[in-house]
Length: 334
Image (cartoon, rainbow, N blue to C red; front, top):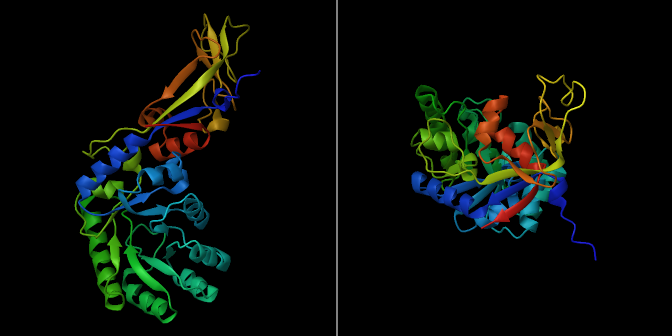
């Protein structure tokens, strides 16, 4: 009988510690002293949104995703706590789908609010306020009017939020916080019980913001800005398989490049830029040629700390986690 097919041999393998993610979340909750909105967008930063959400079901008061489709998948997986969709609905069908799955919509502009009103669904939503990032959000002075329009249309606004654009800059942070406080005061004149959230990972480690909740993603997976002091551990380790054992080089190449010197031995790993890695040096679409000895079928650790790979290639940790996590077969460990 043939042995069971092991897909991970032909793919990169992401080994993900669920207990590590839980410990990181506990550290975030300890530092924040407020309820946690756990951000699991982009498939949990490459770690698998559903598995992360179920792991954090007793720690997170709410989850945040990027799109309605991501939120619907979490609901189908059995997640029953509130789920906030951070990107505004772009079609009436999206708004209807969000309500059908019990998701919280984001109202980020007059156009986005009008779309939900025209969809004619009894939506629950959070109001996004632009305090300086200039990505999404009503102007701070328009928060009250937006809440009034939503209320008249039967839309229940239960939250208000913004986002820091440079959390490590104290002056910029204070300016944004002042704008956000004014917007919250306006919103609470219409919806007195509205809850607020402002800080992501960078804001949390930079200092207190006075909001009701924290909305954290990156720290859950083990990373923080250089000025952070949280006790975190990376949750993902990525491996690849040696697909060509040691060989004596022929001619003058080493992948899509001329060899830098006469290598005594080369070997090939089964990973490449098709798996989310950077095309550089010996990296091809689905193979990477490396110097030295390698044993056919051997599993090789590519990284255990995404910061190292990110710094080497001029990327952010976010990019490395999402790219490589999505391209890998995931193996979860306790």
